[in-house]
Image (cartoon, rainbow, N blue to C red; front, top):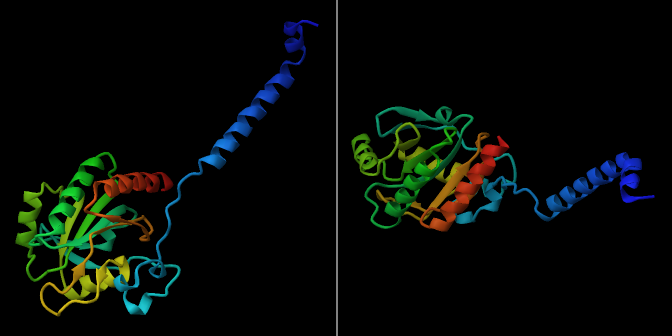
Length: 224
């Protein structure tokens, strides 16, 4: 029996075997290259000095608490403005001479990189609300080319901001001196998903961390 006759006779079997081969190869590829899934951060997973003592041992169901702030345009901003959105947040102050300018520069670059992702927003809390008035935030926003439709710089009640930093976003150290600069913030950018859960922490001063953050945002967009 010639080769051509063999294939004609066993054509269906050949297609079945070919299909099985494709499936097996796909399964091996998936096993060797598993899809990345971002963790859901809980207070117990974060460095204790950044977490309020009352929740340091919480291991599940942690979400961002409701809040009410004022942005650079004098508008009231609450958690509802970020409802069903992925967003990146940080804590800064406009007169910071050290890490804040670098963080703002990197957040601005992230703003540009996210131009096609309208469902992803940005949020920056001032840790010196007495200094960072609406007018001061507006000047800072203009200076740094901040897109008001995507990125809110917010000020508000200091106790509320501090509680959010310690009990929701888990990013501020509790060793201040009680003065205007006593909220000692970290360089962390926090990635929050559409369910108000923390999905990642990133060094806001490092370009490589920003690359990782952008890739993780894309994972969350696909997850949604």
